[in-house]
Image (cartoon, rainbow, N blue to C red; front, side, top):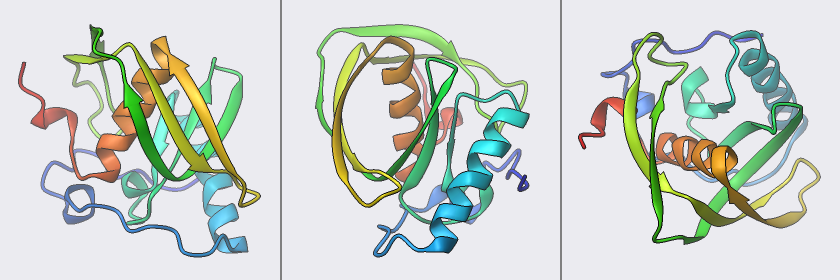
Length: 147
């Protein structure tokens, strides 16, 4: 398990746009495994590399709360116009919750741990998790959301 950046509103890494992963190395795979372990131990549903101090475009998500997935160099390709406003929390800001509108469905493409590109249509909670983690990759935090 690795340490999370908590209460990091002014943390430089959380505020920076993350850099693409150029090569999937053993270090990247080890980091992804550690991120999954950290996410699970902290009862999270997603975790971006920036949240553990690594400025790279990678996050992990707990799909349907049983299937963990790694997203490397993700890009949202399409977002629905229909939104849903639900209260969200963040592992970097324990105890802080905000109602945030997010697209109900999205289409994303990313690279998996084997270096293979995949596309995914996500809805409901998974779509929300992905959008939240994508915000982290852009240096956007839930404390920035004012609705």
